[in-house]
Length: 168
Image (cartoon, rainbow, N blue to C red):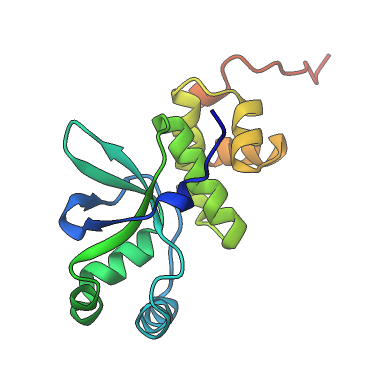
């Protein structure tokens, strides 16, 4: 079967079926949120929100597009114009892969909160993801990952790493 990018299957999902993820480290300042609202109002949606469909709860969990989702939920005129729906594409990935996807989407656009990124690295390590997996999947080098691990101060994040005996 030939791969077909999710963007070729955009669907309108009732906003009440969409939920935010609980791991996105990206934050947008109020002036940029206002600009995003103006953009959606003036230009319409030019990009769908990327979601994972959870069949157990019949909900769509945001992978990328949290701020577009938030604006739509909060702005009555946009929600009314869109018929109470949000344009969504669905990806079917594990939680670790969804976290990596969120980070890739965000890093391609801008900056992250360091403390939240440290928590993401910690969560991926706790899921059993290697530093190499994290580096490859969220666009970091191993030194960045080490620095983020150091910020959390959790020794468990370093298990399995080889360290030189500098004092020898």
